[in-house]
Length: 224
Picture 1 (cartoon, rainbow, N blue to C red):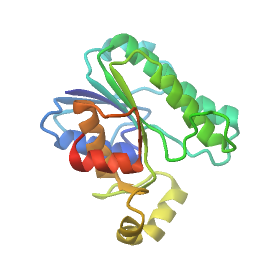
Picture 2: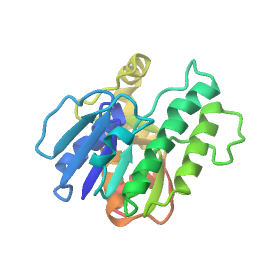
Picture 3: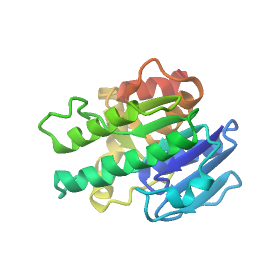
C-alpha cells in the first residue's frame, strides 16, 4: 500500500506516520506539508509545499497512491467562521478534489472530531465547519471515504503537540489517561490507535463511513 499523509508534523499525523512506517504492508509514505517531518526513513518521502489549497504545481507526484490520511487541523479558538472554514474546509476539499481526480481507486480518511455536526446547522461553529467538510468529502468519487471523529487523544511514544496551550493541557491531564480510559473508554483514544485504525480501514474498509471514537478503538483493536 502506498500512502499520502497530510499533517505529518502535527500530533495526530506524527502518530499516523509512525504506524505507517512500522506496518510491513505499507510500501511508501509521501508526507505533504508546509514543513518537513523531524525524521528520516527509507519508506518516507517528503514534499514541502506552502500552498496546500492548490496542489496543481505538484500534481505529477500525486498519482498511483492507494490511501490518503488527512490529519491537518487547527484550533478554532480566536477565529471567525469564514477564516476557520477557509483553513479547514476549503483547503481540505481542494486537496481532496485533486487526489480524487488522480487516484479514483484511493481510500480517503479524514480526521474530523467528536461532535462534528453533519447537519451543518448546529450552534457550535467548529462543528458546523467540520460537518460541512465531512459531507463534501463523502460525495467525492473516491473508492471509499471515511470520517474519523476521535475524542480525547493521548499522545504516545514521545509525540508532542505543537500548540502551546494543548501542550499545557496534556502535561496536566495526560498522567490521568489510565483513569480516563477506565471511566470513559468510548471517549478517549491514543495517537497509536488512531494510526492503526486508519491503516486497518484503508486495507479492509469499515461498515460505516463515519467512525466515532468508540468505532476507532474497535477497529484499532479488532482490525475491521
